[in-house]
Length: 192
Image (cartoon, one colour):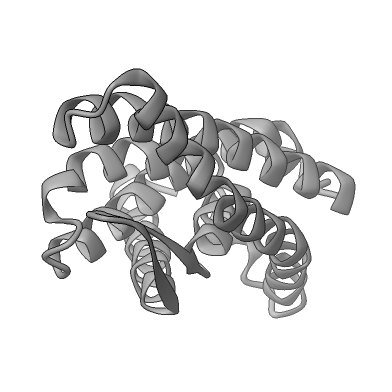
């Protein structure tokens, strides 16, 4: 296969996954937790993990772009869109790195997909909580350190729920999509 068709195919797959991440962000319930602060229940993390599990490390670009584009459509999140690109992109990247060998050998199993999702979620939440403490708490809201820690603690329940939903849904969706592509003789679309 020539590099031109590979580039076009990869770009189309990245665009499709970015669109899924973008749409997944709209399945959101925003919960105010303090004055000027909020958290959300969202389905986007499923698609961020899915991007990495299907596309490998390149899925990080899809999860970052889809999330960034969503942030640009909502005034509450516009100022943080660049951080969202980095944190959500890291989620897809980490998930993809965790499964890249299994994807190349076409031997992605449920345990490996679950591990990839876990690695993606842990990576994201470390970055998200650090962002909440340093950027949102200390810088944007000017809170003292104990107040910024309280802000992090308030976000933990929704974050655990979002992570659990991603861990439950992303691995079986990944395996189902890969199996459907194989049955349809389309699995070559994912090859590099």
